[in-house]
Length: 478
Image 1 (cartoon, rainbow, N blue to C red):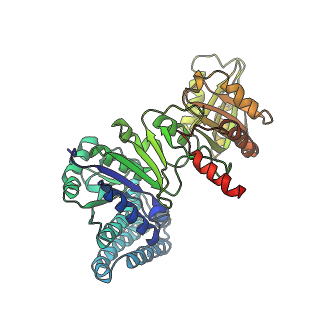
Image 2: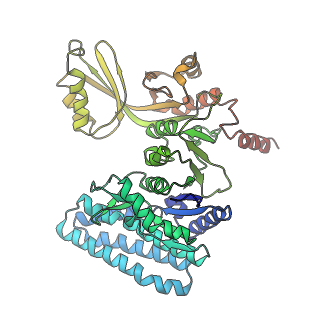
Image 3: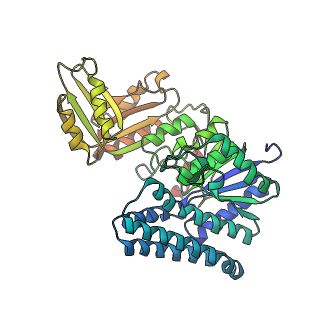
């Protein structure tokens, strides 16, 4: 379908399009790809914090606070109008302003209706939330035309077709591919740069939906798969995936390359760069995904591939998940009874509370969960089955790397490095690429820095950005 086109899907997150200066940077980045002979398809998030504000307006309307909801809408109107005024010529702004006013008039009418009935359905929530991407993609598409990039706005709802599961809709692969063939491919062949909003879609009946957490990344991957793209670029405000949180360990290194499976483990256990489930469509077609920094476009970022590159360094990264609670369920006579473990996990299921780690002994089960307001109710239900106690202020350290299980002595190295830290729970056997353990939250910085110093003292330069560390050290010494 696209053998003669070198398509690159470029997704820009909210901080990458947060203001006119950031939007101008995206245009410069897109132009570099075009000069390489690639054909960009651009996917943009809402401007930073806009979706949160739209949802806050919907919540205010649901409470009956009509004035509060409309005040939020008014601020958003001014922000988008100011952005358009800074980016567009007077002629283009004159042409675009009526469209922008129509969008906010429709949003205001929707908020007034919500305030009147004081009921917010998932379907209406999706409609309100969709405005952020609809506005940003239209403004950016218009600006790309103004600055000579031949931009062409495409309403993502005509291409990203989904079921009707509002809030986290499931994409429909075949209809999406057909819609991309109809709406996007002709623009590429005519040397336009299509600009679509991420996160949003629609049912085949035309009802607006959203794709849930990481939805803009998901849109990029779906478009990449549907168009058989050469690559997908996820542009954020960080240099890529790091060996650990730089705020905890300033010596953290950029990971040059990582597997999808490793990235997924890191994301689940606290890394925030992207939600790997959202790039699964790309991985299924073996399309490489790059995580890049729009504020430092010369940085090579992190490449995510289906298969991990070999590394002589045992771990790729250390993730941290804070504010966890350990729940101990002790029942000396019940543990081995048929159905007992099922009964325990049904309690967590009823409260929609995910469990991170599980450990069992002869008489007890220990589980770790996010600390939240549901814990007293969960503990009360569990106490009907056994004795229950829970300890808060814990943190999970997750160390991810290739074939950890097959490396002799690796556990000894880990726990020798943190021998001065009390370890509460350990999990290794569940995954070949993940070793996790629980410690006191107050010990996180000390433990992570000790582990990082031990395992990344001599990192593999094929996998990690060692050159940046060397340059920084040399600069400090001068």
